Length: 132
Image (cartoon, rainbow, N blue to C red; front, side):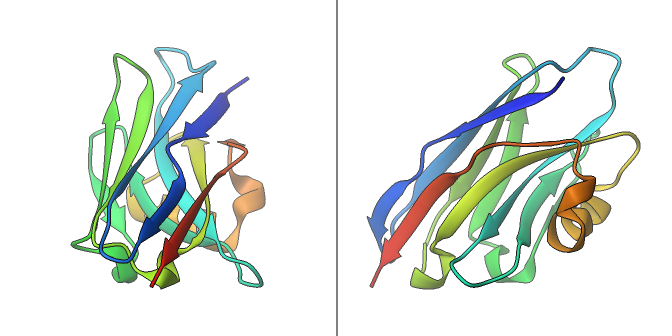
């Protein structure tokens, strides 16, 4: 069973940076998996933020392009989200997610946004608060 544990959230002022990490366990070497981050702000729906597939191809939601970077360290089984130029509207609970099988990064963003129940695994979340 895949387990995901996020860390790195916190409070920053607008324009600041944070790096989120997600430690994955339970993945086998033969599994094809697409990893990603989604967020949920109070009173709002899930929003897929970034995803990276097994070939390293990435996809981002428009509002974070040029500011956020997703990456992974396969050896350490860790997923990262570098968030720069943070804005108050980035305030949300951020979740790490995994989708097993042959899923593109764009498809994974769609799953995280519209069908989070179809995710193979998700973490407990880490809170990011950006003040103006």
